[in-house]
Length: 207
Image (cartoon, rainbow, N blue to C red; front, side):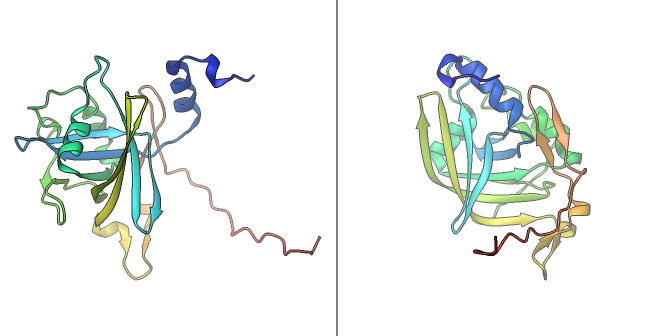
């Protein structure tokens, strides 16, 4: 079957994209409100796109009632945020922070997450996250006035010690268990992995 995008409602287009682009990495983002309350929220329309400079991007939509989310408001004001990846031990807490909290309630405090100071930004990071990237806003793009693309430049990284081989600059995959986003209330583990040998290709003119 096939569909023309113009013939679908925005909700149906969202359901199709979220149902097939799987699994998606999750940006677990901390920001700081004007009174110092630390906000944490997950976003699964997310990825990294560049290493020089190191850039990530995630999308923030409006609340159902049209109000901007705290993450967006805080980033627009301060220009700083921290992106984390959640692993299996933190998955439930990460999911809990996706709820609708008023600005005066910080999700990390509410769900019992520990915070640690960051190095290059004022926004604290989640202490127990396996990986975190401190970011400065690189660019914000408005899409149809109901969604913002937040592009951040990573300026400092934090890695759980046992996950990283400093000499080889490689992750110990047998110790790293990130959670992926599916759709609706579904997530996935990422432990069932497949290894292929490097593809050789074909030399020009050999066929």
